[in-house]
Image (cartoon, rainbow over all chains, first blue to last red):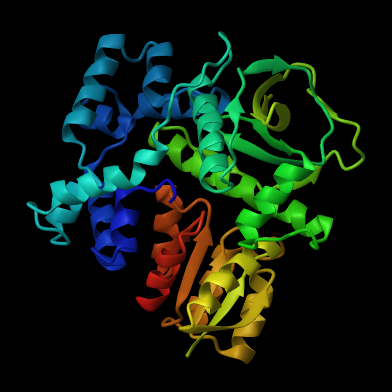
Length: 287
Length: 119
């Protein structure tokens, strides 16, 4: 019940051994060329030009091909040609496992079908993000997986509200924050009322009654919930080519004054209405 | 009965894992460590058969502790526990360093036990 990649799914089910998976990954690493390596291998760029692109990438967050076009080293057409070659020669993990003898080729379609069924609950549904917000696809994944985890883990019945841009996060019983870096520099918040916090605690601790638990234990369960949600978001983001690092969760706004969205940042709120009351909220503040 | 050491800085996760592992009746949870450094110390005194260890922890993270434990005993049975299990690079890194498997969060009780049984 988590976002996985195919190799992990097979190891978990003891269909392939960890040793053979590693062998297949090594094979993939040797066959699947990165954009720059592919462009070099077909002499579309020179080593000196590749170095220029690498240097320029240190000061601007652009992919190799986009940077090469920006610097006038490649035309748009040439970039597309390299991408097509990369795509056509890509060795997928399933194929690599067949090549190293971990799977029989006739077994592969069946396991891929089983994997798709396993991952079906994590197919992202559309969430409307206000126009002009950067990294909209990432925030769509973030909101949708947060909703799905509230349903699957906490078994919360709710109605998601429309995403809105906010300048402030109002105080609540527990607000947990986690930093995201890499493809974005943002802060992810889960803000919950006491009732929703208890539901999270019951789910995480696997206890029917958590009324006797201390507040720090209850807060710890909200931190763990945020950690699980964001870990799965990072896995889903990696599938669309966005590498997101997540940092440890912490309880914030302990003095209950609320949190202002800093100037120059965008605050996105995804209200979660529970029994006619807005008690849970997933918020993203991107710097 | 196989002895299991749980290593996690979160009280919630430790309790959740203990409930699943001890509840199976097949394993005995012999200790809880809050970080990698504590895990290494407890390994030397408790000699667990299996260690379930979080990747991200304060003081010493799980990956650093895994490296140390493997250096001390290359047959050590460590299973990494992480919400980042689905990130291919993280999974591969743990396996390459000697972890026997990776348990992804949220936990599936049966899957956790199945993984431990397979060690």
